[in-house]
Length: 400
View 1 (cartoon, rainbow, N blue to C red):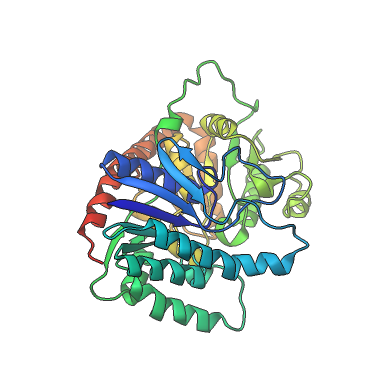
View 2 (tube, rainbow, N blue to C red; view 1 turned 90 degrees about the vertical axis):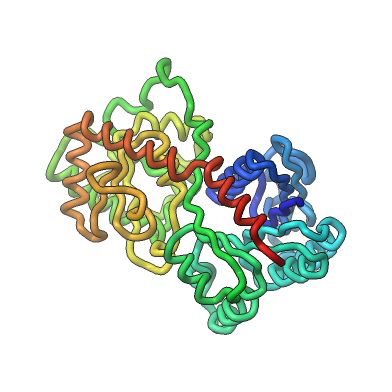
């Protein structure tokens, strides 16, 4: 049996989605399964390059951009739209008919309805099992439009019942899937996954990139997901009430020092000299920044997206043995215990957040012990080999 991974994101390099796929592949291969990766859409602009071919092998796993890697120029909006919404799904369908065999498993990590329909149709024709990954609540994604209630209804009531199995990243998403799946379909809950191997680095010859303690935030800076404005407000309060040297460091695409949408707020709060917008940095530099950081704040406010998701960056920070402060919103509270493996607070409790930051900065040994126990949680619960065995058993238990 071959497990076909269908996705509309880049491979093997990318953000959290790509890292999760790599963890799955590592775990499934350790369990004795074979995997290949199909990227269903063009995902790169002209001039962009990740150094990988459109078809090849990555660490023994074959992958293929079945519609090519590069989009048409941005001025060709009509062609780009036609390809994304119509032509690429049809190409993926034809490719699937040629490459899927009876008894294979088709794993789907994407959301466009027509593309899902084409993949499901090909899988049903060829007698393959189908699995849908659910890492976000579909209702929290995409732009709001007049047809959204209709498209949601189609997905929930017509598309979801066609799958034989589901992978849910959180308890709330497992409940959501159970509401709409057909009765014979199965669900497995698999949390965030973090490969320990990249974190096994000798830092003895390295120095901290800053000469003062700093708070690190990596990845996206979306208000709905990351509550950056609330982090900035708490940091400003910290600087007023505890005026000791400390910096707040952001990395990632949205942390561009010229274009960051939070620059105005940073200036208004008087934090220009204390907030560092590093922008994109290498994976190696991310690991160094995390290793030497005093702490990280993962602030999830209460909304549909945050109640259902489970942030990969949490696992990465835990694996880096960084003291974590996070809210009680979402899946984290099922794995972390406040004062034992992390610092948990209720959203909008700015006073508690500031107190937690100050406690970590003033008691680094106690914070380090909590961070070590947090890393133990990551090693035990977010291990790709352990979870890969569970996923493999789940896949083999499915019936098309």
